[in-house]
Image (cartoon, rainbow, N blue to C red; front, side, top):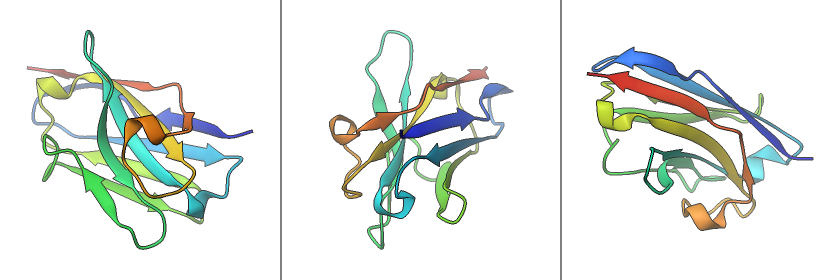
Length: 123
């Protein structure tokens, strides 16, 4: 059974930082793309950043480029999202998800999802 468990959310003031973690189990971790997605109240879920498999690299939404950094530790089955210079518009539930082909950052292609962690940025 594939499980993804997020942690690290919380309340932070604008300009602050948070580091989200995603612990994965039950999958051949190296083969999967792991993505961070978010959903704000009343809005659709959107991609934030993805770490693709092998040497396919990383992807970022334009809204977070230069502020967020995704990284993964394949030995520990962990993915991290370092979020700096947070803005109130970053407030959302952040989800970790896994995509079996390891190639895409498209939300619809993701097969497994965590339960989410709340990030709230106050102004």
